[in-house]
Image (cartoon, rainbow, N blue to C red):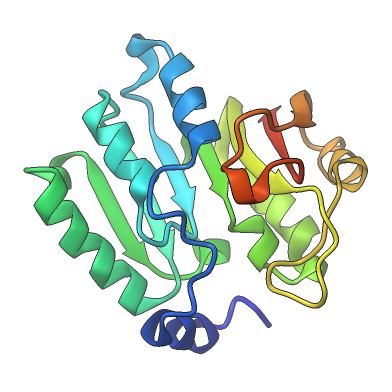
Length: 198
C-alpha cells in the first residue's frame, strides 16, 4: 500500500522524487496570496509535505500556524534542514511531523493539497476524503491541485474532475473545481484546481 513508509523512504533516499517542483506550486501561491491577512494566523495543514516549498512561502507571507506531515523520515529531515536555512525561528510557527496522515489528529482551518492525493492508492481516496473532513473545522477549506489525467500504473495515479466531484460532494461544498490556468509548463492542461468547503 502507498501509505508504506519504507516505499517512500526508498524513493527519497534514491532521489526518485519526480513530483518535486523545486519551488512552491504556482496555484497554491496564488491561493495563499488571496487569503485575507486576518486569517493567516489560522491553522494550516500540508499533508505529504516533501520539501515544503509552500510552507516556506506561507511563513514568509504572514502565516503563523502551519503543520506539515510526511511519512518518509528522510523527507522530514531534509525539510527541517531547509527550514533552518530559509526561515529564522521557523519552529515558532511551524510543526513538522514524521508520520501517517491517516493517524493525524488536530483541527485545521485550511488544508493544502499538492501531489499527496495522487500518490495514494485509489482505494484510499474515500478514506482521504473522510480524513480531510474530520481534520477541518466547520467551514474549513481544502484547496489545491489534482491531476486530470490518465497514468500507466502509479504513483501518481490517474484521476479526473468528474470522479473527484462524486468523491467529495457528499462531504463538502464544491466552491471550485476547474481546469488550472497557472500550472507549471510540464503539467499545463492536465491539472484541476479545487477549493472545497466543509
